[in-house]
Image (cartoon, rainbow, N blue to C red; front, side, top):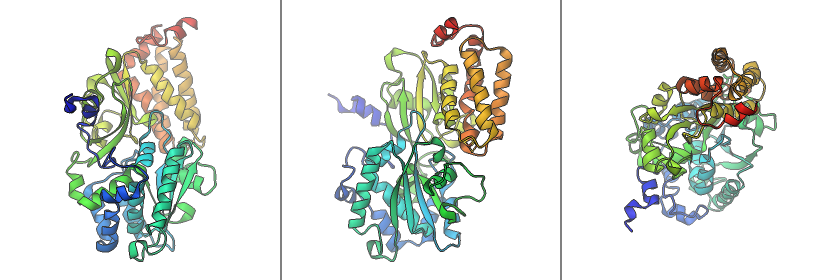
Length: 442
Ligand code: SF4
């Protein structure tokens, strides 16, 4: 067998492993193995050689942007928390993953617990936090177990508690299990949830960096962001920034799923095209079907048609085509998928997960769903499409948090690129055949 052309070799070729460094070569809970593979070298470097300013400067030079979805420059957040005057600061790792088709956080937490803890420790030291929480959804029992085990080992090895690695840095980190509300992935809702309150997003400012957990300055980054930190510190900002595009540096982890021959967790350099991911890493569309589109970024993202698969995966290119990176869901669709049905599916999810605070997110999405149901069952009118678009735009404008602001994206992107499918349903035909029975039955 020529090992270079096995499915697994093809799947791994083209990937760049930073968050997933030593993929498949380490036992997740083996501390000695992690140490032998450069584990905690970055933390030691921070504690012994770098000042807080120097660490943040490395993060700034690396060009790292938060991997949770919005792509906000990480160094700005770190600086805000570092500069805040307070007797107490906190750090939170946001591992509250809930989008359909997404399993990035789960796989990272299950596979690289020590790397994530090391990233959090470096962040805490840089901003002056002495306490932290790892927010993991309770539906991820293995992730919770692996992190708890790793935390216990870190305590025993003097990497948590007082005088970490002989320095005067003291830090304590605990797991908080989330109850599964998608909206709790939003920073302010997540904080409320840790505080024992209902997870409802708050208007910003003040930002959590100024007034976060228990009203104290709090640094929140997502799991993937923290898992990139040790590499940046160990190898220098330039090693990271030379990967990717001019404005989107480094790599991105995706959960590649859907109608693809080879799915799974992938880590790719920013700037790779959708086509490269689908064809080269994913091995093309399963069962000889035609590639139709990708839904990128889960319910917050958008659909990009196969005809635009040369689109580069980076923050700006995706925005230009009306999609967004999101946290890393990447679902491949084929000719048997109905785009009206896809829009309906994702909107049903966000509608159900809306906390209900904003009128448009609560009621606007409900009205949009009703219109989509009419269209799916062949009862829609052409004028419904304008109404759908109007409601979608108003929901974006009238919502205070990312959930409501991005909920209409799957509808707007499918309306933009697959309007003919909406019109076909209105004329009593589902091009993929998926809604045919619905149309006839009704
Ligand atoms: Fe709640 Fe939606 Fe408003 Fe966000 S946009 S606060 S989820 S109602």
